[in-house]
Length: 112
Image (cartoon, rainbow, N blue to C red):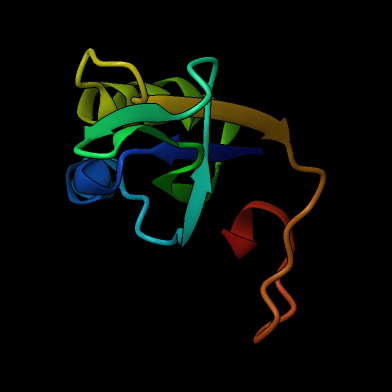
């Protein structure tokens, strides 16, 4: 099993969610986060001069998938999250040793 942590633009969440649902992945955790990349935020010009917004609002999706579904899940996220502009986000893949469904005690792939 693998855990996918995808940090994407807020406005792309619905499209990414629908794409993952098409592959049978309905369970996920979504958090509102903020961050910045290499550009260190974005500059904005106002009448008072230029200001820099250091941390940009984003959405973090966390989902655990089977090893054999990793590639298609990543493709679904990337294809729907990409705008081609700076700030589209990042995806991290982390190995998962075990998962336990609290309600039933099921473990492993039966728990996801």
